[in-house]
Image (cartoon, rainbow, N blue to C red):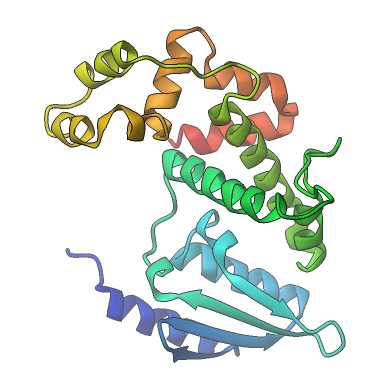
Amino acid sequence: MHPPSDDLLRLYFLAECRDLGVQAHESGEQVVITYRYDAVLQKKVNALLQKYVGFWKSIAIVRDIDQQTGQVRAEIPFHLLTGQDLTPQQLEEVAENVSGQINADLTQKEKREDDIGPDGLTARQRGVLQELPEDERPAHAQLFRIGNVAVRYHQARETGFHPTEEDWREWLAGLPPRIRPMMEAEGFEVAQRALPFRRYYLERRDVGMEEYMERNLSPTDYASWRESSNPS
């Protein structure tokens, strides 16, 4: 049995939104849903988003909440409606990209707001959490904390990242035959920005990601990261 097409997924999603009493319509390249916030309804909307978007990808959904009327508006790009969530590697890539964008933006300001505080969050991330419904904040805060530590690992701020072309050649030799020519064609300079190569380099020097994550996360956050990294 073939999975439903993207068009069918959108139709199913729109229909299920309307079954919940949520207004939903297509606008440009996204689906826009609006509803009045209610704790019970919000849980149902969250479950629906996890079904069609996935928990990790749902972080990318733009939400606007009118604090006076309680009206919620969410914009869901069509490409998120796949029914598939991010893999652990894709999650790491998203975390690094988001962090990079934030860092690039904040370096233009005199006051640094991307420094990670004792709670494991940046000032901007705390601001994002305040805009979310209270029952959604713990899960999103945990995602931010895990992402921050994963980004630090790959940026190698504490471990050092100084690969040579010999390291790159060793990495290439271990890649599957179909992938190796593409990675080789991209060259050594590009490879230094690739998460798989960075992780290979650090693992080879006994700076394992698992050890790093365990050392820098709370037991609860580490257990969550382990669960997402090793799906059953």
